[in-house]
Amino acid sequence: MKQRNLLTRQTQAEMVEPITVEYVELGELSSPKIDKYQKVSIIPLVFLIFYEVSGGPFGVEDSVQAAGPLLALLGFLLVPFIWSIPEALITAELGTMFPENGGYVVWVSSALGPYWGFQQGWMKWLSGVIDNALYPVLFLDYLKSAIPVLEGGLPRTIAVLVLTLALTYMSYRGLTIVGWVAILLGVFSLLPFIFMGIVAIPKLKPSRWLVADLGYIDWGLYLNTLFWNLNYWDSVSTLAGEVENPSKTLPKALFYAVILVVFGYFFPLLIGTGAIPLDRQLWTDGYFSDIAKMLGGVWLLTWIQAAAALSNMGMFLAEMSSDSFQLEGMASRGMLPELFAKRSRYGTPLVGILFSASGVLLLSWLSFQEIVAAENFLYCFGMIMEFIAFVKLRIDHPAESRPFKIPVGTAGAILMCIPPTLLILVVLAFASLKVMVISMAAAIVGLVLEPCLRYSEKKRWFKFSMNADLHDFHSPYQ
Image (cartoon, rainbow, N blue to C red):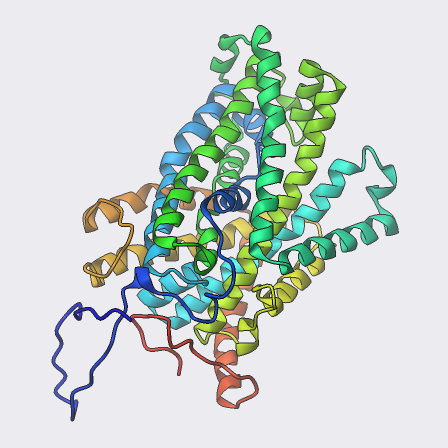
């Protein structure tokens, strides 16, 4: 390990004898346990981020229904500067500062203490599992028009179970495989929109892009659609320990992924709103399929429907990887029982995958409209803690090794967090009372669960351990 000077010189009068402490450069940190597994390179990582955040333009149609073409286009151009870019930059800085699985859990733990780090992990994991429970169901929703038997009943239940198990097995086989599958699915999902743009050129009317009816705007639907489609940039941080040369690869991958995601939203919206006469009521989930049929015929419709279905597979795989490696990272920090840190022969966290898949199966039978809103609520709380951790680490440890550092000082870091925080408060303000109650109940479970785990550790019901190779600014539980 590389020695470095202490950040600050502290005199402790109560110490009887001096203690020599050895530190490591955080950018150089790696765990011997995971070095033997194959790492993820930049191209698969870009597409993993793409699927953790986006997966394609499927689901952005509601922004046109809510606010019209002009505000929809402006939203997907401007909100990335308010939300996506700041979140991606913070993820790049803190992800390279702590290049280990656990990501945002480690950031909050280092800034605010292990108790709040656990709360961050609980809320983010729960929101991720809720999010992942949607994808097998949405996949079948795209297929039921071609296979009507999948619309409901026992065949649909069996299909959800089989699909979830098949995708879970793919996650178990290794993150490298998941990354390359994400590349194939990403290319397949975006190509039909390129073709749609080419065939739409003769029909484009730029005046349609300027249509705005300020008297009829559903601000709640508009903001939630933008926020839903442009968040989760921090999810890749829970895979930082699996990335090849994270100090360089992670920032580059986030940069390219931001460009890919924004293009993947803006270009289809530009084509769809410019080539087809506006009927805002038709702009709901799946309307791009209708536009494809009008512009290119049945073959393009079929391609986009297949791309939409497979996109849900890609999002499931990316989210499952993020959720399971987060649990592995928390176990390596002593926050969860040691069994969550156990790896399969493919290098994947077996218990974390099984635990996350069980949550997905449990939630797959529920109605998701309000639960998804509750997920957004939990996610917002987690992001506020991340912003606080980012600023606090800048203030408390300004000289700490940061392989990638946002080129702003402490004041700039605070100012950078203000616009996304205001956006979070606006999104929270539009939540219903029922959503607030569900979210607060879930948060209370985390507040109680952490002391229960510490009690089980004290009673030796479960074995907990802290990976000695990991760095933290706070003392570990042990």
